[in-house]
Image (cartoon, rainbow, N blue to C red):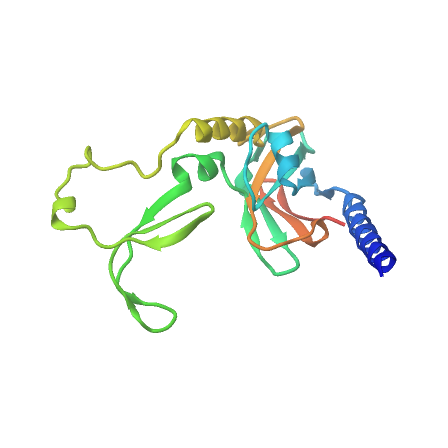
Length: 219
């Protein structure tokens, strides 16, 4: 009985190793047009991302190591906003995130909400909605008259940036693909937040910018 258990365990380990090896064989995503070309290598393991970034980004992120190449003598504008990561598994589309959206003040936003019925037809009370990258949306109650009378100088900032977040923000900005006009090939990182559990073979990189429109699958 013990031998059967050992053999079953070895078979499971071998299968997992084969799947991991298969993912490693998947090459970079590449696309080329008349004016622009890019090559993207995906980092999906947290430890692998930390090694490339020099800081711990946390769970739930996919990072692309991107090489962008203009193909004419004319300067070409490139930006993280040009890139979207698509899951062919469930259709999820994730635009590239800026450093400040992940670790800066832009990581938390406040939006005013009006009385509207929710998905169940129940009215929702007024009050701001706090949301952010990796932050569960939570509706706050309307401010009291006392709170409403506070001046802007007395109000708390939307997001605090401690030492850890500051270090992460610096690393994200330093390693990010530049947001500028380029004449020569450049390299950098793109950051995406994906909710679903995707494998590398499920992902597609979409580009829409001054260099046209390009699509590149990981395969």
